[in-house]
Structure formats: structure tokens, C-alpha cells
Image (cartoon, rainbow, N blue to C red; front, side, top):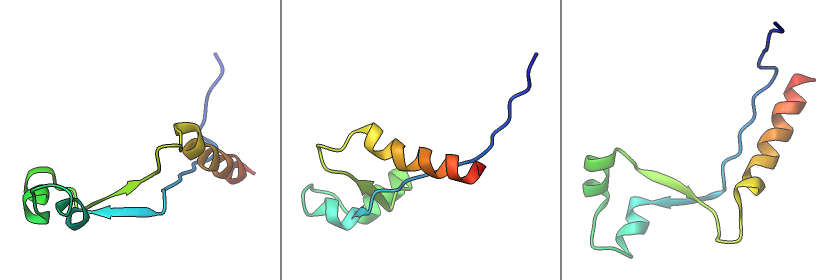
Length: 68
């Protein structure tokens, strides 16, 4: 049987940050309420026309480049 190895890793994080305070402008909630229940302080956001492959491609390229 052939062995496998992880040769490189890659990641991509969208630029737009949405904070709990941003969400509280749209919903009846607060930063404190969200953090206490979920532990989440902020999240990354992509527009509706961005697909999973649009996010995966830069990460895959980075992983391949890391392998050399």
C-alpha cells in the first residue's frame, strides 16, 4: 500500500468582516447576547455571487505553491 502525505496547506479568508455590532443594526440583538450564546465576535462575509470554488481556488493554489 502506498503512503500518503500532506505536502502543503492553504487558506483563504474573505476581506469583509461583519461584527456582532453590525448584525445588531439589522436584528434586535446585541454583541453581548451573541457572544454569550455562541462565542462568535465576528465573521467573514462574501457576496451572493461568490461560490465555494471562488474561495477554494486561492487556497488550493497556496497549498500547491507550498509544496514546491
